[in-house]
Amino acid sequence: MSDKQILLVDDEPSLLEIFGAMLKRQGFTVWKATNALDALDLMRNVKPDLFILDVMMPGMNGIELCRELRTWPDTYATPVMMLSALGDLPTQRASLDAGADVYLQKPVLPRELVNQVQRLVGELVAH
Image 1 (tube, helix red, strand yellow):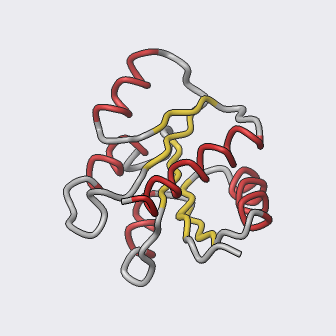
Image 2: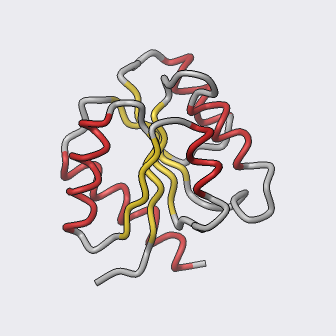
C-alpha cells in the first residue's frame, strides 16, 4: 500500500468519484475538492504528493491554481497533472507554462491516468 496522497480537484462530482475510486484501488489516499478555493482550504491540513487539476472550473481555474501552487514553498516542486476536455494547443501550452508536469485530455483512459500518477509520484520518490 502506498502512503502517497493525491489532491483531486474537479467541478464534476462524478469524475471525482470515478477517479478517486480508481486511485484508491491503487493504494493512494485521495482528497477531493470541487473548486480551487476548497482545494486551497483543504491544503491547510493536507500536504499532497500530487495534484490532479481540472482546467475548466468556476472561479479560479486549474491553470491559475497551478500557477499559484508554483509560488508556495510547500508546493512549488509537487507534481501537477492537468486534466481537460480541451485538447487545443494553447490550453495545453498554458497549462505547462503554469508549471504542470503532465496534460491529459478527457476522457482519460483509466490505465493512462494510473500510469501517469505512478510515474509522477515515482519521480517524487526518486528525488
